[in-house]
Each structure stands twice: as structure tokens, then as C-alpha cells.
Length: 288
Image (cartoon, rainbow, N blue to C red; front, side, top):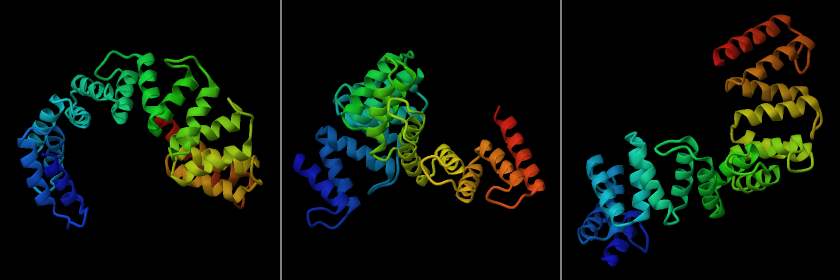
């Protein structure tokens, strides 16, 4: 049985000198699944859900995920949970996330943490949310590290601690999590849990801004506007404010209006200043 499943994987991804053949992989998954191999049932379900080697069939995908999940296959339990989320059956989703999480499935641990944090499918419990985030974070999951950092930042489900917030934001940020990069930039800018360091703040804002994170673009613009951690540069600041404004950040629009009013990075133009101020006010009122 295991030989068939391993051979199927080799055909699915073209490994071990075999030519990629999704249809052959599907046929082998079927054989192994019929013999009760839970991991093969999980992979067969994936084939049905995504049309790998066969036509898409949501009903059969669910059926095989449930077979595998009922056998205790943690990957299938996580997959079933996500299907229940799609079906908006949040109680069932939370049940299967927790089953997989209890077996150490890292993404399930983060997901059940989210369930407890939001009160989705379970009674809201910030302490349990933080506990699950920590389990996943300790396994290196960047999303969970970011969520745990936020819990420490706010004191939600854990004792408030900027030091611990910085610790976990840094772990997530170093893995490329853009939210964590933004918040780490903020921590350095404000001196929360670390010594205030504008240059380090700019470094992290820049990383998040490069990934398109709107608030990071705005904060980076502020650093150039005020000359904090970088040489003051109204032209660069205005360029960034425009990028943030294009993403719907209305405070940037107010600053652009100010730039036109005082000729910072652009020639004075009161008509443009009026235009940007009006645009900012409209968007601000819309978001209230």
C-alpha cells in the first residue's frame, strides 16, 4: 500500500526519474485509498478538489477527506476543517482544526487560535487563542508568531509585554511576514520594548513597504518627510504618500495637500491642495 502511494506522489510531481503523470498518480491514489490508507485518501481528496488527474468533484473530495480525517489523519482533518469554513459551518471547522492541532499540525494550531480569538465556531477565549498561537509560533509559523506578538502588544490573553511583542514580531518579520515587519518598524519608531531607533524603524518599514503594505508605505513616507532615520527628502516622501493614497490611505492625502500648500516636493498649487484635501475628507467620512 505504501509503495503505491509513494509511487503516486512520484508520478504527480515527476520525481525519481518518472515523467509527471497526474492521471497515473490519481489511479494509484485510488488503489491505495480503497485499501484504507488514510494518507492516500487525503491525497485522493486533494485530486478531486483540485482536478488533478480527474475532473473536479467537491462531493467526492469531501467524502475522501472525511474518510481520512475519521482515521485520525491530521492533514485530512485540517483539510476538512477548511472545507467546513468554505461551507460556513464554523463549529465543525473548529472541531476539526482542534483535532489536527492536538496532533501538532502547525497550521491547524494557528487556525484554532484564530477561532478562539474571533469566537468563530467556539466561545471566544483569548487565553486559549494565545496558547494555540504560541504552540504554532514555537514550531516556526510566521503567521502565529505575528498573532502572538499582537496578543503581547495588547495584553490580550497574556500579560501585556512590549518585550515579548518585539521578540515575536522580530521572528515573524525575519521570515518575511509583512504585518510583523510593519509593527516591528513601529516598535522601533516609538521605542516600545526596544531602544528608539529611527534607522532600524526605516529598515523594517521599507521591507513591508516593498511588499506593498499600505500603512508601512505611509509611515516610511513620514520618515522621509520628517528626516527621521533618513535624510529629509520631500520628493521621496511625496512619492510614497502618493503610493499610500492610491491604496486608500486618506491621511496621506492630507499631507499631499500640505505639500502643495507649502511647496514641499512640488511647486505651490492651491488648487491641487484643495483637491487633495477634499479627496481626503470624502474618503475619511466614507470610512467612518
